[in-house]
Length: 436
Image (tube, rainbow, N blue to C red; front, side, top):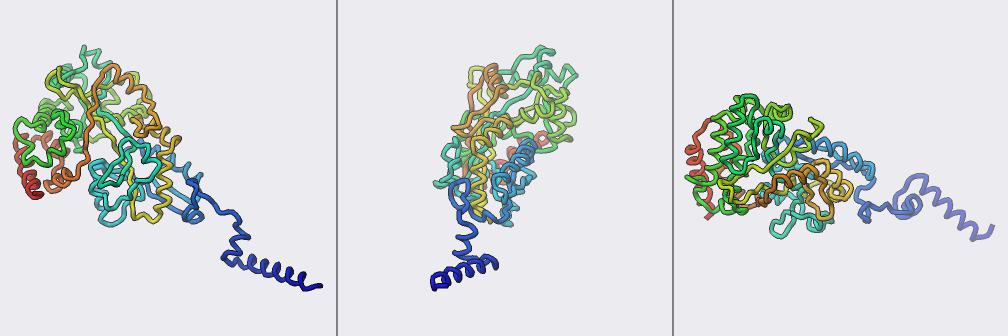
């Protein structure tokens, strides 16, 4: 056998030896993995063969939890090594996440309210270069960085049963005074609760005490201006007008005799079973109603008329919400980035926005909303773009320990509006002074 054949045999033997013992390195890579795997983004995927677990944190909104728990299973089919766990965040006020933030234990990707983004900016990954960012209408920008992308945009409504209004010969109220008259008329009939409120949970007062004041002020920058005012809760303030409405609803039993003893779920049941004529909630509530009632034949909605005169503009708070943010300290940042892009991809996001009943925040993905199209046609209003995102306001609010929803619950429970305002003004004034 000549020398060349011996060399070929020797090389073949060495190659078989390397393969048999599983030696890693350039040679074994070329033999065992001649083609590199490519991620969906067209770049080599990080940890592609390693199991990855992503925690997706969202508020205790049952419709979202149900949707995403089912939907993320599709992602695991695209990326078999990635498991997405839908994690329930018990509240949307930010208190629970603040504890997680202090412990450096935030979910990999999670919902934030627009007003909460500034508090988390050091823990959030900038989303400047994302494809989803380019098409989003309302990206949250702080100091030149985009820190969050809203999943939804929605308006606030008073949902009602047309059959009850027809039975009692009631018209859609056009002013705040007419709204109270409708509530009183329903109560006097003594068959239905005028408006369902789950007062056991303070957040349920938000349509009245959080959104009422800025709407009455007609100022989209209401919060920004509040942060520079020493005593914004005084006599004849828009806060006082909203608080007095809430006080009258409580004192006249216009939300029933036990509104403070029931939570949101019980309030929904009262409305869905037609024991209550109305309920004030955001656009997001529609899908919840359909899931339980199965039909919207006896459902309609109008904007709560936060105006004292019919000649004023009729507006409803319209705002982006559920800002998606990424934990910059996630152990799997690259995989989380891909997951966020998947959420805002055309097929996935279109399914979500149609399911949720909210308005799309993406320029390239439309909303399918026959119910709300009909509502806006029959009961038109102008959108009030409420800028709830202001760093100074959040700083003052934190220093003053101001919780408008808790203040609303206290007033509903019997506290004097004047006393509540006095206390709020004292704390707010000190907070504003401390920032000088």
